[in-house]
Amino acid sequence: MTKNALFRSVVTAAAASALVLPLVGSAHAVSDTNRAETAVYVVQLNDVEATKDAVTQMAKGLVAEDGGTLRRVYYSVMQGFSVTLTQDQVGKYLKDTRVGSVTQDRKYRTAGKLGTRSHRGPAPARQDTLAANAVTQWGAPWGLDRMNQRNLPLDGKYTAPNTASNVRVYVVDTGVRASHQDLRGRVSAAYDAIKDQAGGTATDCNGHGTANASLAAGVYAGTAKQARIESVRALGCDGTGTLEHIASAVDWINVNAKKPAVVSLGFTGDPASVLDFQLYMMTDAGITYTAPAGNGNGSGEAVDACEATPGRQTTGITVSATDRTDRRVASANTGSCVHLFAPGARIPVASLAGDRYYTELTGTSASAAQVAGLAAMYVSDHPGATAREIDQALIDAATKDHVQDPGVDSENRLAYTGREGASGAGAGERR
Image 1 (cartoon, rainbow, N blue to C red):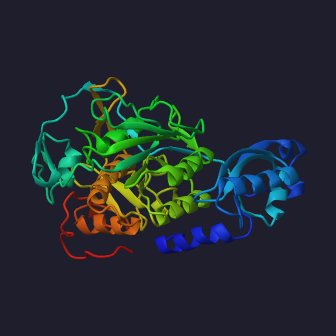
Image 2: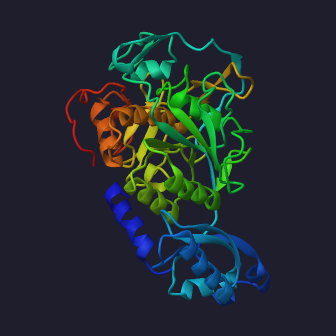
């Protein structure tokens, strides 16, 4: 599916007649036992004011008339709610003209694999302040080093145009270890979507969120060295999260984000038009986000990034992964939904093993998190930029035609920290 076609499908899904995923079978094909079993669904509403009170009132009315147990309400980027239903009740919702869609809850997973070993890292890296708030880092991790120059070999140095100290990066992931030296003093516990609770503690019992936060804004591992991290925990200790919880996270961010802001999404999974629509509306409201392209089919083989959420959504900055030789990581997804490539193989990241410990992360979430830092640096200089303008600026700056085996229809552009236009022919607007 092309990105333009996807955009049309997302908008259509918001206004179309009721849809349920997966489809409910015919009445005679479902046993009485199965019909009585319950599951969680996300219901999108038609023609309701985008306020919490209005959506709650309609949701309660639907539950009273059509059945179910109301769980959560979404009102900002999508008007709807989550509810526990039997299959018979799903049928009633599908016939109700107030309902736009009904989507069964599903799980999403972290889009990166952490290393099995951690090591004590360096003290916070030596940084030499340059003019205009720029910074240079000697002995930089290879991923930063690669994005800082057009060609190989690496020179061991990373120079950033600014530190993005005025920008907040909202990390939607497993939480963040706030005490780690790479992030200390710049992490806030913004929202826990699992508990549906604002604030709380910025804890991480998995490690993936801490890793990605360090790639976006770590003093040693990160691209935007002084951006603030706002932890939005939507994935649990096992690295998975549900559509219900992630929808809460996006809804909360759209209402509460303090701009200038960038959102870093660290998960991937099966397509969900209702979540795609939420993300589209979030960017339309002025908040840009980066998304991992995804890491294949589970057997080490890449698939089309347009077949996974959130990477398929047209207004996000979807990023796939390369290794030290500029070759696409074999499992990294490809296709027309990929805007950029960035380093994503064995990238040094902050570890849960200790406040001075580091490990490695491989996967497209590592690539997307680093690009979130690049977006934060651009937003720092251009606080009024739209999501499309930020996306286009990073594409224009990227190094062209250096990625080996980018995959069919993938944009062959490697993320670059500089501001000048893309090297090589073909600079300009993306498909």
